[in-house]
Image 1: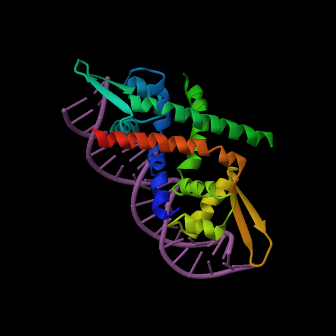
Image 2: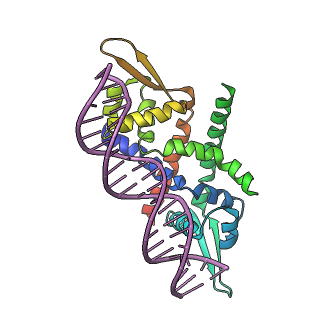
Image 3: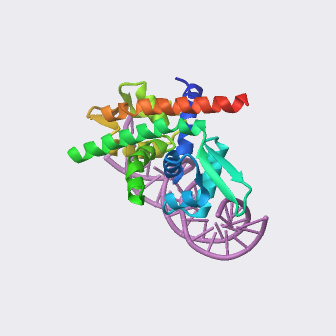
Length: 112
Length: 112
DNA sequence: CCGCATCCGTCGCGATACTG
DNA sequence: CAGTATCGCGACGGATGCGG
């Protein structure tokens, strides 16, 4: 395998990983996954410990990558709801695989 | 879902991600995957662009996490071979899923 | 209620030089 | 051939305060 071939082969995986690897993205996905729609402040409360800055930054990334959808309702007071897109939902099986591998591996470590 | 429940739920996925997310780990896995055993310098040549420092650091992590196996042959000149463990092999399907999702998503971006 | 601008600390990454 | 030690930079994470 040449350098180019190797790079081409892993590029899509790198791309996916870059999205998942952000410190809060996994938590955000897990929360969004269990709600069809959720408001900003509700989301902020569910993703324990996150600051406004980080939540907005993470959401921005996720939106730009087509994983999260932002819907703004022009009411008073203003209301914004977030939800997973179809693309975002397709990320869930991967998330579950990550959990499975992690569980198996952590389990084995304890067994000796 | 409480804070603890959420943390417990995602912890294994975080663990798996931390392993995969290192800058060179994906490339190293991809190379190791296509060789049963490979020597240090051969590996260094295949993982284009990596420095000795980074290769050793990455390998150390992967070994500590039970993904890579190091076998040293006491010959002259010295010879060390690296290979994936059973646990490491179980990471391959995840890697492939990451590639698939990335390809689909990148594809859609170009379609408009 | 929702989000942005700024500033700062930490850490992953890496260049270089050295060892058995 | 197969590594280790040291030093430094830059990007990401995060606290705080402002704006619509």
